[in-house]
Image 1 (cartoon, rainbow, N blue to C red):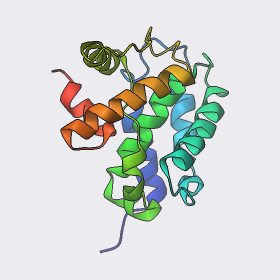
Image 2: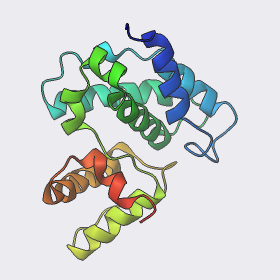
Image 3: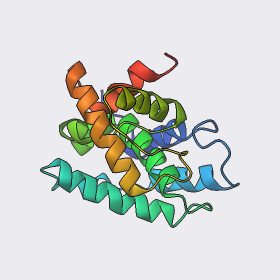
Length: 172
């Protein structure tokens, strides 16, 4: 049996990963704009990523492209949406295989939202690490980098990639 049409699979993942609760409280049009961005997302931009630095540079570029399209122009909202979409895409057997996404999972960030960020900040405080978090709407690149670097340490201690921390934190 042949694979389903990859464009329809990508559209489904865009719609699933960017639901109403994902971007709750954002201006009208944000969800539609983000979904359209991801329906047309070209995973080939990651083809030459051989390191986490390469991947994060490409992720930064895409975050800026999405930020410039959404009504709020929020870097944090854009990064959250991008991380959710890429994570879900990597865990779809068709998108993952077609775009060779499995090799990139070690570079993925944990999706930041209030519950995940607060949990990471609690763990940081216990270790004497000070991180800055106000909310996802006002999150800046530098703050995200600090939180993600600490999250990587936590995940390493637990024996898995940082993108999976959400599994431990979600509704814990």
